[in-house]
Length: 337
Image 1: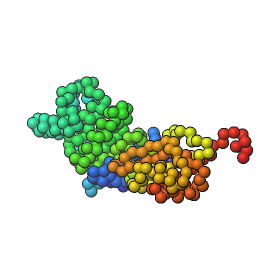
Image 2: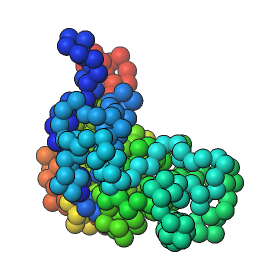
Image 3: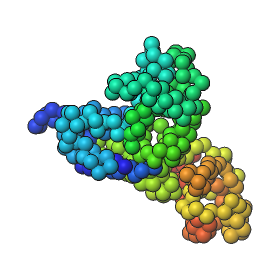
Image 4: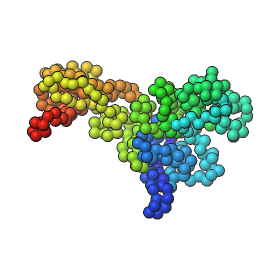
């Protein structure tokens, strides 16, 4: 596991200092994928560089399996870095080395015997489903395949923590999905702690167990992914599941925005809501899916002739939260009113 404790990184000194990360606290358990999201300039790249100790934190700690890496000298740190494998946004492969030779590079640097290198690299390329492409060069591989070679190289020294720094950025949806499936598979098989830094909200929904939002060097919201997307008041949860366009309601229907708040929302909730209200309910739009085996979602419905308290109560009884859409003025008479 890895713990980030009061992590601060600043550049410059005194009144001219720029604080990029300000006393961050979070942890990633074994077999957990923890995503950190944020806009450009939020501090994500600096966080990645501090976690793998390419940048020394100004203060605070990076603790891996109980050892504070921030306190180590350079010689100790070179050894400790082996516990953290890093997957970069660009695959970082050497163009004149084959997939096999790219994965083998860290072992060769450490002087591992050729027989052990062959055994370890072959094992990892098979694990990332590229065993039959070992002798291909990077330009002969797709973007997703090159990234999987990068994942194999990040695992070659048997780290306990895997740092993914925008590893799916620029990949097509199919390649992104394949990398996400692989990371989840490796997390389970190797008991890894994975810190997944990204700006791609859709990818977070596919991969993460927990998520935090980084904003100007601060974590402003964090929690279990399922809990956040179920929380109607969570800004991060709403950003992860943005509301999309919906169909126009029939005349006389009020538009309501609805979100799942429990795990036991019935599949037939629209018809059950209609029966409870004694009124027709129109489904205008919805996005329902499974996250980590739990059904979550949100929907837009049209309800005719019912008071807001009655609709809210009926929704709550089905494990749903709802609020009416704001009324939008459509004419000068509406504005005057």
